[in-house]
Image (cartoon, rainbow, N blue to C red; front, side):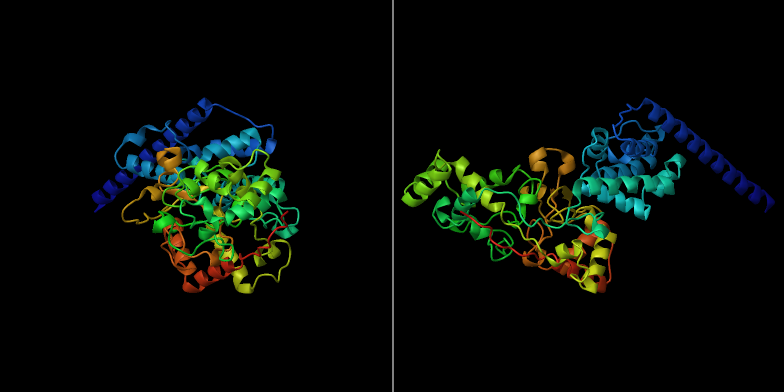
Length: 463
């Protein structure tokens, strides 16, 4: 028995010495790695503190394409574990744009701010598996405070709306503005063209066919129907509040509303017109439209002027004054107790790390299946998403985060339109994006909060 005890103690001792030796090696490697790193600083002292924390804690190991790894990264088991952590870390969050914004002293993406805020508040980063070897990777309360103070400063400086109540100015979302700048004469022409089926090949489909202003800005179908009954490959996103999207379409292939308006008319399974010349030839036969158009656009009807006018009209399609907007502006009674609880759960369960900003989405691209592989069946070209535009493997299966504004009016959900209810959509997002399940009562609370996002569309004055 004594011999067995000595043997066990010996094994433990050897293991402990080996572990401490590995920790010492990692400390030396990290120190050398940091000393070799190209140091770039910002004009902002606050930004420099955050940059130093991210460098010293080794955030770039998992959140950039890192190649300067310790020797054991090539050993069996360690290699698999590290590859998993780095793949998931980079898939979840790319640190490079944020670090550049710190150096340049420019606004960080709101979703980046909220992602970092969540892991600081819940103390999930750096993960235990990392700090078990990287003892210097542990973050102190003081360091977390530095990062959280910087996040608040970013929101107050760049994002908080002037009419937000003081107690809500550090929230990850903002109310929809009451108005946006637009040209009333161009928008009036755009209104007419938006509802004009002559833009389609067989004079049967207008913009309003798939983006109905009386139905949440959508058509209520899984995927839209084009000319001659052609079925589209992807769910029609709402046209309401699209002016606040960073880019347009699910894959972001259109940089602005004007470019987006130019897509469907020539798409063979949407409006299917052969060319802009064919479209303008039909519209020029309308003497009144031609006269009114030339008064605003002296160059006359063309693909460029038609899409410019439609885009100007679409700028006016905003839905301010939802109960949630009124709450952010200081009306504490605008939300029910259940909706307030749903808003808290929405943030606690990481929903706001992607659904941020004025329209709770529309600003970034995220992959379906962050925590658990999302089953598509056959992966179709539309499922590939952002990678169709960037050709970057990291963007495979990423879609633009959809707005949650008026979400209760825009079923069915997801880019395939194959999720029928908000209840199901919330549960799927929790399971595949967050990796959690909630009691039905808490799902109900989140759904109640989402219903508070229905705003009020008031047609803008047009000339």
